[in-house]
Length: 205
Image 1 (tube, rainbow, N blue to C red):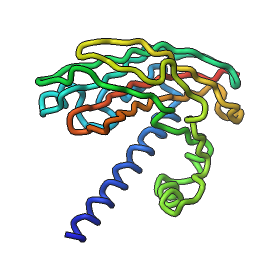
Image 2: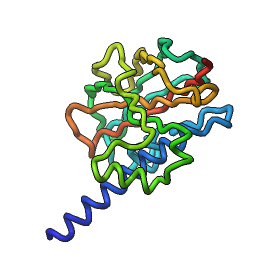
Image 3: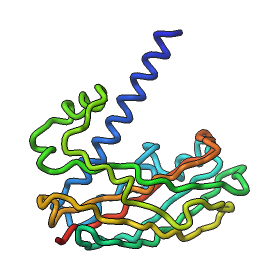
């Protein structure tokens, strides 16, 4: 039983690391002119909210962001309206409490991507060391309202306040992605799925 539990824990850690580095890979693709959206279901579930509900989930919280690339300078504040929808399945919950807290992703600077392999960064994370070139985006994002209750079938708008960090010059002309972090206070993960979109910002100076 202990061996099985250990395997599950290791598998979970590997899955988390894979998600982090998949996100940072998307973060640093500056060539595409379209946001490479990790859309509903891309984070947390392989399938989207419809598949989640079809497989027994009761409620899916779907965040939709503007499908455009915003432009901002380092140090600039940007307010983006995002839509939060409570998509109801069979036997849906009548209402779901939702809280926003920072973002689900970080940024790895392009120079660090070239200088270090994903395995080296995974090793740094595993050993509790600072990850080379990692920029935490959590401190630069807040929401209003940050907490809300959404009834089944309801859509509510939330303002995502983004402060563009004072990034190195190498990030000028490149994209930074911000994936809203949705928190389910009830932690009822079997019945409530969260599916965030991402906001893409091009650093222009």
